Length: 314
Image 1 (tube, one colour):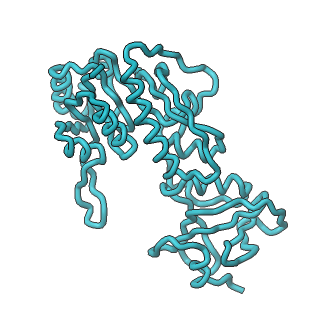
Image 2 (cartoon, rainbow, N blue to C red):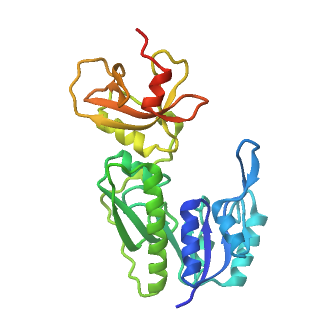
Image 3 (cartoon, one colour):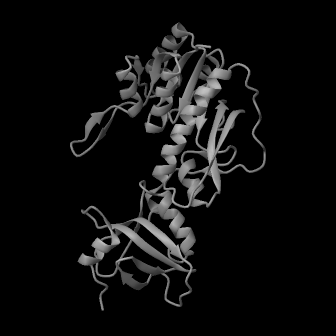
């Protein structure tokens, strides 16, 4: 069954889904994405990954600041509404779009709006489900294809695909695997419309994945090493973890670290050993071994290179 699909998304996570929908042979007459943002050293306006993919495929793009007819940009919202009414889409697919869909948008497509959400709902509703799952020590995560409603990730589930979280998963690597899983899952879901049976989300187990904040970046060594190692993986690459080392005036970024199950009586946060294998930091429970670091204004370095330019002050 070939469907007329309007796609709404912005980052790389969504780009893979758009490309998969096109490969599957569905018609995509319009793509919605966030306005171009300044980036890079020159702060030039750059299109989102989804916009670039749409342009490459020759698909018209709309970039409204809002879809609310009663909001601050009613003219832009009304223009998109008229476009969608003229298209009469079978379904809208939404993936990390960044704008809230008002009720008129949810109701307009024949089969409503489907969201590709990177968690096993109802766990980790909200903005940062990938990183929060690693940070919390979850054993698994996945993709939920959800029928959108007016709530925050509260709609009925249409299709669920699970993925085990490995001990070496970072925020970046898990993102990439879930993006591919999401692309495969939405193609599968579209192929089964309208036979998919909506399943209400369980009332138990609801958690919220709060937006990541730089205030969470500094490592708190009064926590166990295992907790800190998960935080380093979850926040790699954004917003990244930071800490102070003796003898340095600015915080360093910690890109890789591992928990060592080794008792210590040293004060949490103090350096207990330095070698080419790692810089060992005492924590509330065990040792956190730093293995990849970055000075301010420098590049990421394996610890063997880092310690050549840094010595623990006597």
